Image (tube, rainbow, N blue to C red; front, top):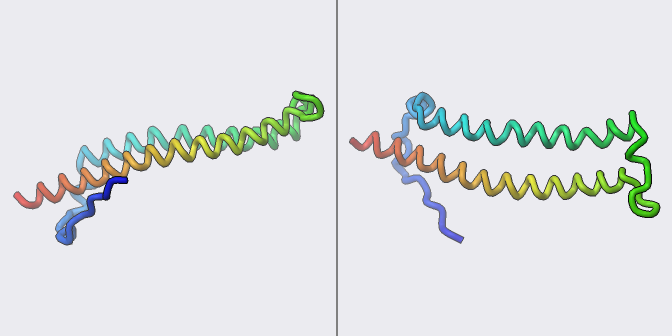
Length: 113
C-alpha cells in the first residue's frame, strides 16, 4: 500500500476562502455530489422497498425456492447491496481524497509565488 503524501507543516498558509471560491474546488464538489446523491437515493429506495412491499403487497410472500419466499431473498440482497455500495464508495472516496490533496497542493504552490 502506498504511503499517503501529507500536507507540509506550512499548510497554515492556505487561504481556505480562496480555495472554496476556486473553480477547481467547485468542480470537485459538483463531481462529488453527482456521485453521492444518486447513490444515496438508490440506497434509500432499495432499503425502504422491503418494508413497504411487505406491508402493502403480497407478491414478496410467494414462494421462490421451496419454502423460501421472495421476502427472504430480497432481505438477503440488501446485505449484498450494502457490501457492494460500501466497496464502491471506498474506491470513489479514495479518488476524492487524492483530488482534495491536489487542490491543497495547488493552493500551496499558488501562495509560494
